[in-house]
Length: 210
Length: 210
Image 1 (cartoon, each protein chain N blue to C red):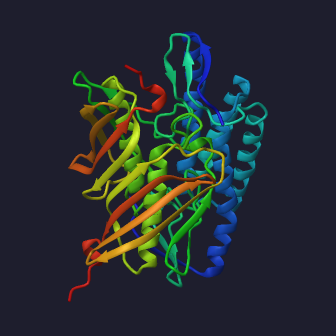
Image 2 (cartoon, chains in turn purple, orange; image 1 turned 60 degrees about the vertical axis):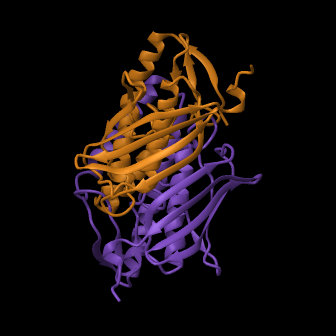
Image 3 (cartoon, chains in turn yellow, red; image 1 turned 90 degrees about the horizontal axis):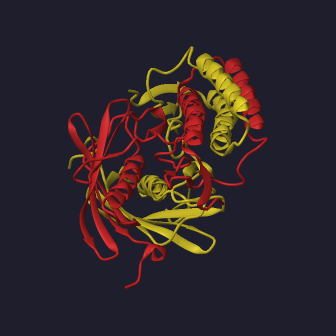
C-alpha cells in the first residue's frame, strides 16, 4: 500500500486540489448520510445505486494503486488527505479541523451525524476513542515530539449525542524520554462525556542518538 | 435523534430490505474508496460531484428525521443497520460480520481499505480500538450481560496494515456484578497488532433489582 510520498505540489497546485476535492468529498459525505437515512421508494434506491456505480467506474479509470498515504507540498507541509479523522479527501472523516492554542493544547469543534452511530442516537464509543487518539498525535507534535500511540485508555462517563455541537481537547502532561503522556476530553454543551489518556511512543526510526 | 424504534417488519420484509439496501450500501462504500483514490481528470471529478448531489437530493425526498437507531423485527431480532461498525445500511461500516463460537468468543475476519487509514498504509489506531470496542459488546451479550463500555484500554504492538486479511476476537474474562471484564486482540497473518481490555458496565436501566 501507499507509503510516504513526496509528490511536491506548489502552493497554487495544493489550493487548486483543495478547491476541487474539498467540495467533491463533501458531496460523498452528504451521500453517506442520505444513504443511511433514506426512506425513498425502492425504485429510487435502485436507480441511485446504478448512478453511483457509474460514477465510481469513471473515478476508477485513473486511481492510486493503494491508499492515499501522506503527501508533502514543496514547502514541506503535510497533506494527510486520506486520513480517516482529518482527511480532506476521506468521506469517512468528519473531518476534524484541529487548532493548537498558545499553551500547546489541541482543540476541535464538530458535530457527528448518523454515520457515527453506536447506541441509538449516540456516538459509537469507539468513534470517540478514535477522535481523541487522533488529537493526541496533534498535541504531541505541538510539543515537538513524534509520538505514535502506545497505550490508549478511554473512560466513558455518559453517552455522547449525535447531531449536537461537540468539542474535544488534548494536551501533553509529561514528556519522559521516548514516552509522552497525554490526556484529553470530549464533550457536549453539558460537559465531558469521554475522558482519555495515552502513552505516546517515539517510533524507533524517529529516535536520535546521543 | 432516533431512539429504539419498534418498526416490526416481518421476516419477508426484512429479507426484502436486505436485498435492496445491502447492494445499495455496498455501492456507496465502493464510491467512498474510489473518491479517496481517484486521479481522474478534474472535469470527471466535477461531473461526479454533480451526479452525486443529484442522487443525494432524490434520496433525501423521504428520509428519517435523525439517525437510524436500532429497529426490531416482529420476532424481536435486532436491526442495528445504522451502526458505524456493523451497520448493513452504514457505508462507513466495513461492516464487520461477527460470529460467536461455542466458548462465547466473538470472532470476525475482515479487510480494511483506504477509508480507514491513519499512518501511511496502516489502519488508524483509533479504528482498531473502535472495532475491538464493538466486539466487546458482542462478547458481553454472548455471556448474557448488557454491558456498555465503561473503560477501554488498547495497546498497540505494531502497525496494522491496510489491504490484507485481518481478524479480531474478544471474550469475557470475568463477570463481577454489574461489571464485566473483557479482552480482545486484532491482528494480521503475522500475529497480534493490537490488544485491548475493557470493563463493560450494565446500564442502570438494564439492572434488575433483587
